[in-house]
Length: 136
Image (cartoon, rainbow, N blue to C red; front, side, top):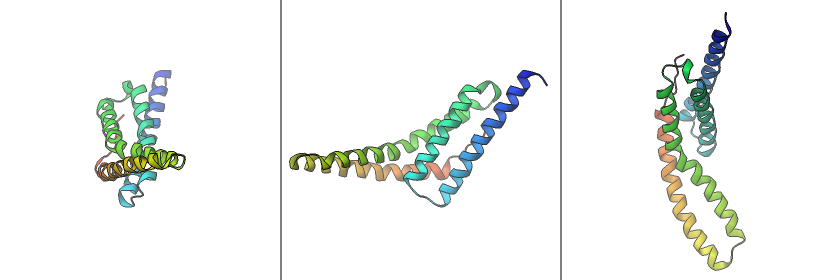
């Protein structure tokens, strides 16, 4: 076996491991939804798979489609994850604000909470409907 085929075998193993880990967690999350915790972990795993596919795309003929699936999943879950993080941050700021500022922060927080709620519904759909598979 030459060095090139060893690298290809390594790449295939790496991407398959990441795909299986992501798909396993996605399937569990689809059955037992835990909101932010699931979204965060799935987004991290999706970024890892996407990076591996981008770096090793020569070893995977369907890499562009799989990369696109990872990007779509990231987009579908962004509002829920990023909004949740932003909501927590502004709530911390609220503690140090003056009364008038607190009222404005509360109003922004309510709007953001509504956006997060909508984002969670979208993320939940993405978790249920998205599948990750790579042929190498």
